[in-house]
Image 1 (cartoon, one colour):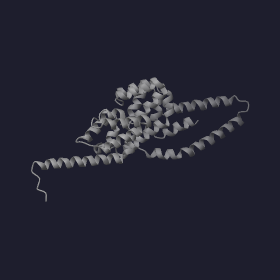
Image 2 (cartoon, helix red, strand yellow; image 1 turned 120 degrees about the horizontal axis):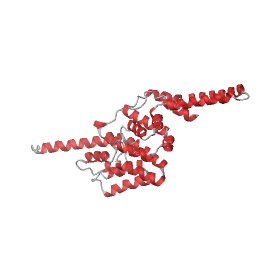
Image 3 (tube, one colour; image 1 turned 30 degrees about the vertical axis):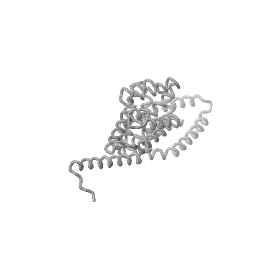
Length: 293
């Protein structure tokens, strides 16, 4: 039979049990949200703020990121955290490293008090999908340096993000720089509305309109195209037959588009409106139809 603990030992034991309980909860959060954590962690800046992680572990993480990509690097980092050893305060250290390393969204997923709600997750995922949908247009038309600098000014990016984007732009050109910018921005917390501001304030209004659902520009282009087509057919030698054939072809295209977009329309209508975006999510269909033509 063990002797009873002294009055001085009891608080220490309680603190140790509390620390162990918190560690277990933290590890459980990692296991639950591992796929999301891997998508929103950039390992190099995070490693700078993890002094308790051994040099060998850090090197293993860096090699994984360089050879197999950021996602695999993040997986190696999470494994290192899980393996330990984990001294007192390791949870606070890792949480601070995520925040200091520009991974605020990842920090939310390991902190139960800041865990995103299912609705916030859905909104984030939908915004990421919009960027994927318009990825080619953004890459072709975005002036990467200007937008990146504005994102830094608005607090979306940290200095390390800007340096990374400029390095890619310098070495591989504006398009690859734009890809790097987009890959980083979708990893941030509450990024979408501020990204729209950055686009508008750097004279990329049309890109912001495409992303936000302001379809006025698209509708005007469609009307101009219809008017132009109408004028051309009026001067044709046999307008009746040509117009009839064109209308039939257009109707077939429209019918095909409606069938293929019905699933997307149903999905979009179920989602809630994201702050800073249009109240009509059907603009996604307008964008798709515009590029379909």
